Structures are given as C-alpha cells and as structure tokens.
Amino acid sequence: MTSPSSAPRVTLVTGGGRGIGAAICRRLAREGHAVVVGFRSDATAAESIVAEISDGGGRALAVRVDVTDPASLDAFVAAGERLGPITGVVANAGAATAVGTLADNDPAAIRADLDVNLFGVIATVRAALARMDAGGAVVTISSAAATLGSPGSYVHYAAAKAGVEAFTVGLSKEVATRGIRVNAVAPGTIWTEFHQDPERPAKVAPTVPMGRAGEPDEIAGAVAWLLSDDASYATGAVLRVAGGL
Ligand code: NDP
Image (tube, rainbow, N blue to C red; front, side, top):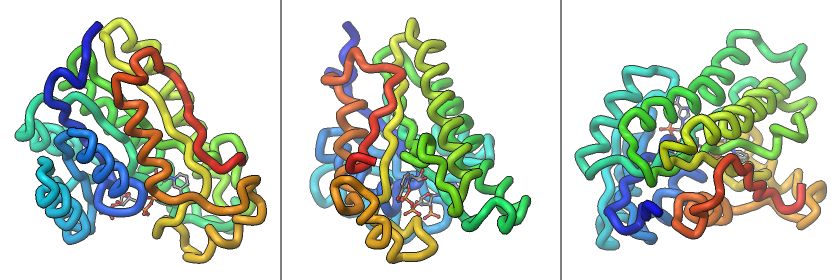
C-alpha cells in the first residue's frame, strides 16, 4: 500500500488565508504537511497564516490564485511545488455573493457564484491532479446546502455544491486505480466571514439539532482525517459535519 505519510506531504489549500481554509492550513501544518496557502485578494491574511506555521516549525508558502482562472491555477500548483511534489489538494475556496430568492438574485451574480463554487473546484482539482502521483488525496468542500437546498438564501449555490458532490463521487471512481482518493466534506453553518449577515450562524443555531453553528476547527479535523492514512480506504465519501442538519 502506498503511504502518503512516509514521504513529505505537500498540500495545496485554496482560500487558505481565512475562515475554514485557514483552520485547515493550521491543522495540516500541525500534522506535518507543508502547506501551500492559496489566497485571491487577502495577501496579509495568507501571509499571517504562513508566519504562524513557520513560527511553529512548519513549512508554508502563500500563493495568489483565482480558482476561476485555469492559468492562475497552473501557476499556483507550479509555485506550490517549490515545497516538494504535491501530495494533496483541498478545494476550499467558495463564496455566495448573490443572496436572496432566485427571483431577486441577479443572473450575472449567480453565474459568478457558479464559477467560483463549481467550475473553481473542478478546475482546482484538475490542475492539482495533473501533478499528483499515487498516494495523493483530494478533498473538496461542499456544504449541507447541497442536500438542504437553501431556499430563500441561495438555491444556485446549493446547486453548485450538489455539483461538487457529484464531481467528487465520479472523480473518485475515475482515479481510484491511480491510487488517488477523492472525498468531500460538507459543513453546516460555520462561524466565518462567509455570511453577508455576520450574525447568521447565531440566527440559524435554533434550527440545528446540536443547537449551535460550528467552528472552522471542527471542519479542519474532518479534512485532515480524509487526507491521512487513517482514511486509506475512504474514497467517494461525503463527510457531513453539520451538527445534525
Ligand atoms: P470565507 O468567506 O471566510 O473564505 C472564503 C475563501 O475563499 C477566502 O479565503 C477567499 O479568498 C477564497 N476565495 C473566494 N473566491 C475565490 C476565488 N475566485 N479564487 C480563489 N479564492 C477565492 O468562507 P468560509 O471559510 O466559510 O468558506 C470556505 C468553504 O466552505 C467554501 O467553499 C464555502 O462554500 C464552504 N462552506 C462554508 C460554510 C459556512 O457556513 N461558513 C458552510 C458550508 C460550506 P480571499 O480572502 O483571498 O479573497
């Protein structure tokens, strides 16, 4: 069996500068991964994650990337290889800029959200896979929205995340014989700056069986597990981490 942890692990994380992505970067660094912290606009946030990891004795690099641009993704992967051969990728970057009912949301904003949340994930994984060998692992970040549908908030975003899950399942089968595993994590509502209404996690808490929104670290642990040898027989899984939603 190929063991990814027997060799240095180098993992790309898009949207790694803040929110769930930052928690993933910190957690992976603690588990011995060299981490490529992808950021689109917030270089300061990404550099501070890199500094934190370096101060803790880990290896990390901040690299600008726009996941909607395949050329930018190729450059991101190539820059990441400065840390060593790529062994993993977390397609985490996402956004919901069009918020409201379908009727109220502007088609151009809907298209932009689909671009980031669906095409962006597919293009990220495609670029990384081209450089990954047997033993590699891919994690996509979906959402509980993929099955709940998010009526009144962003049904188009939920549709994109459902697409991410179908992509994850299909690709897992496509690359299984290459020795590469592909899984998804589907978070529930998490305390990050993702929400246009910053108090949304508190507002949805009463609808969550566990009675609260989640923390980014609670997602990072699931991602780290899927990238680890402990998950060596897991592929095509969607791991829901949503407080019972
Ligand atoms: P944040 O808004 O806190 O962070 C989003 C990250 O995505 C930022 O780092 C941002 O980079 C990056 N990003 C956005 N667009 C692009 C792009 N075009 N190219 C590259 N990077 C981009 O959100 P979260 O941390 O909450 O979200 C992370 C993932 O988790 C997303 O996929 C989201 O859909 C998913 N999710 C979040 C939930 C939540 O309740 N928070 C629930 C379920 C799923 P930069 O800062 O540099 O602009």
